[in-house]
Image 1: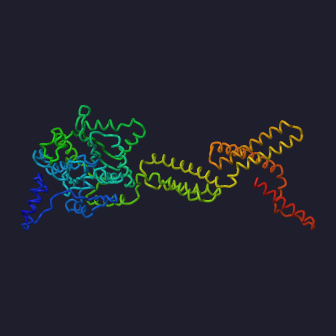
Image 2: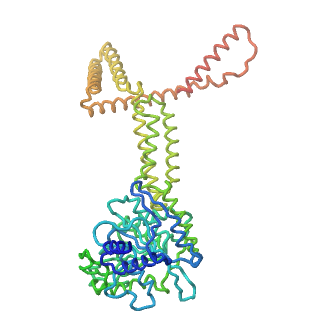
Image 3: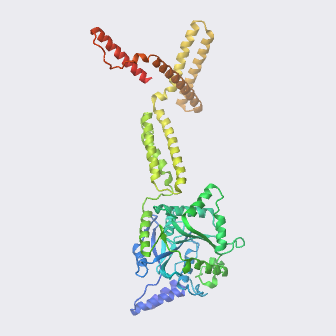
Amino acid sequence: MYLALETRCCTILGSRERDYTILQSSMMKYMTGAVVEEEPRPIQIVQANEDEHSFELDVAALEKILLQDHIKDLNVVVVSVAGAFRKGKSFLLDFMLRYMHSQKSRSWMGGDDEPLTGFTWRGGCERETTGIQIWSDVFVVDKPDGSKVAVLLVDTQGAFDSQSTIKDCATVFALSTMTSSVQVYNLSQNIQEDDLQHLQLFTEYGRLAMEEIYLKPFQSLMFLIRDWSYPYEHHYGVEGGNAFLEKRLQQNQHEELQNVRKHIHSCFSNIGCFLLPHPGLEVATNPCFDGRLRDINGDFKRELAKLVPLLLAPERLVEKEIGGNKVTCRDLVEYFKAYIKIYQGEELPHPKSMLQATAEANNLTAVVCGGDKPYIAPADLEHFHEEFREHSVRYFRSVKKMGGEEFCQRYQNQLESELDEAYTNFSKHNDGKNIFYAARTPATLFAVMFVTYVVSGVTGFIGLSTLAALANMVMGMALLSLCTWAYVRYSGEFRELGTLIDQVAETLWEQVGAVLTFKMNNLGERYRWLLALPPHSPRPSLGSFGKSCFSLDRRLKQMMWLLMSLA
């Protein structure tokens, strides 16, 4: 039985001699009845559900690691590596593991023929890591001030693979940034504008989940530029990296680009950059490469020997803080539980939800004034508009949004403008259902024809033939316009001409209506003395005839009062 297991494991592990030796030793202990100690390994604490595009926290696994008696009350240092998939994040973390195991030795990188083990990694173009993994062995380090801290290494699912949505990528990056004290942003060859925009999106997604933020929400961010090909412009390492980063993050560009940079600076207390050379063609092209140092480029090894201590040397360790308070391993478990609940819920916006308020307002208005709904009074329509507008703006303000207060105010103004524009369109649509409004144009043209017909008859009778001819011409034009308008409405052709006729008729209607209103108001002012006495004022006792006259007079005044009110 042992021989069969050994042969099978040797076939699976291939050239990874160290892993094979460990497994062989474990099998021997098992066969002899000895107690087998669990080897340190990566533990999946956040599991990705690819079908539902959701994430679940393995609470038991997390508590088993962080609630060990010797570390649960120690302040924690969390170093996380995040970025696009297939860019060497797990490969880098395995060198960090070597440093943590042998940091007091100058030869911590190991021998030239020692395979690289730890977090699972491989060559190729398909993703390897999913969700979030942490190393099961938490390292206890003595800092120069005499305090002990627990160091936790975190590996994350690569972003922008073919199975993950933008929300998936944002959730993983945000979770790792929120729970880490040092976030290594792993990039390839350069810092491009889309890298900064993705960083803005992901950190904003994390910031929304953290309530009552008075300080910068996150701690240290390290841009790690892999395969740097321009050492003649900026040297490898942290000095060249910081000079390059300062140039990339300068704020003298377009306002949109400035906002991205301001946001990044507002999110992190400390930002740095490290330029790392290419590890060599043997690493990139050899399918059997297993991490042996003899196959790695010398420049890469030299700069890697500077990078890892920069992050993990005892004097460089950054303890995790949230809200200005240092976090212990026990606290970190609770923060993981709280944060994962937020991302499992629906409190945070989805990438497409910024249009939701406008769409909701338009749909609510369509319910009141839809195509199959009857005509509604303009005053009622305006009331519904104000109600829905207030509701939409209140909803917009209540939903968590990305971009900050000033940025969101612009979109609130845009929302209000679009709602007002939608109301104008619905008002026109509603007016089209009003039979009297629809008959305004033919009624106006009929009125013009009638008036000009009367004027033509009167002026012809008294011998003013020129005015009579002019009136006949206007009447003929009105008749022609009416026939044309009817044809346009019936056939749907020459719509521009029909619109022009409607506009002319509407102008006449409004002008004549304004003149008549003005005349009625003047008439009312002139005869307002008739209404000097209120309609219900007491009168002296009169005879039967006097009472009848007084009753008639009172009713006339009431009618006049009503007419004046309408005018």
